[in-house]
Each structure stands twice: as C-alpha cells, then as structure tokens.
Amino acid sequence: MDRISKHITYAEATKSQNVVRFGLDNIPNGKQFLCMKDTANEIFEKVRDHYNVPIFVSSFFRSEAVNKKAGGSTTSDHPTGRAIDMDGDIFGGVTNREIFEFIYDNLVFDQLIWEYGTNDNPAWVHASYRRGGNRMQVLKAVREGKKTKYIPK
Image (cartoon, rainbow, N blue to C red; front, side, top):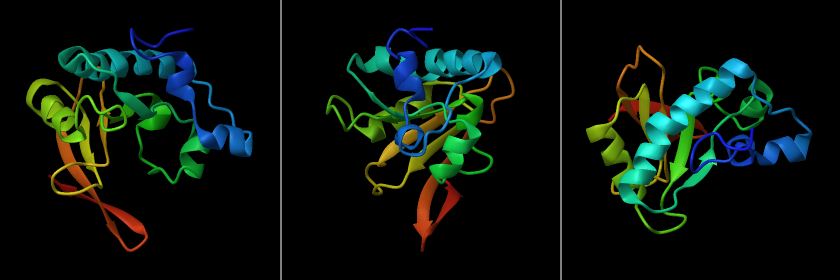
C-alpha cells in the first residue's frame, strides 16, 4: 500500500495533524481504500496530468474521529475516501481557480466546492467522486460567524 495513485502516496493521503496531536487512527478499510483510488484517479490525476505541475493534497482520507477533530461536516465524503482537498497555490504552478474551473468544465464529480478564499481564487478546492451516481453539485463555502455555510456556486 505504498501508493494510492501515480502522484499520491498512501502516507500523503492519510496524513493529518490531528492523528499525531490526538493519537487517532486514520487507516482506511478496504472499501475506503478503493474509493480513495477512484477519487485520486478520476479527479486528482486528471488535474495533475492536465497542468503537469505538482498540486498539494491538503486533506484526503479522514477517519470519523479525525474528521470530527478537524471540524469536518458530519456528511463529509472524506471519511469514505471519496473526497480530496487540493491546493495549487502552495507550489505556484497553477491557481486554485484554474483547478476548480478545469474540474467543473471537464470532469465527472459528485461535489465541487470553492472553499473560502476570495471571489477570484478559493483558498483550496474540494472535490468528491463516486463510482456512479455523481450529483455534479457545485458549491461555495463561506463563513457566517464561526459557522460554514455552503451556497450554490
């Protein structure tokens, strides 16, 4: 289990500060691992191949406990292995807006979320994928006080 896909290692896909900080388990089961491979290959690798530059994976698999500590939604696809958060701005080869627009224009996805940031560029891009039954739902995450609200984009 060294790699999830061509450009994502198992360690990268399961890393979390909360795992270390709180001693939590973040090991996907067989079904979650297969979903991670699907998401990596159908979303991340297609973006990565299109731009041919490194893209930072800020969050991928989160066990239920890790997701809770991260303040993730109770309906998040991260615990199923179906969601990935990407940040092109970290390495500077592609903007998060470009990632968002490429996914929107070219890929099949369940959810695509413009996460915070500005009207010009999200802070990161959240995308999820399901083998069949993708909703093609496009949202924008905004803060209202201390809470996150998801609005149609």
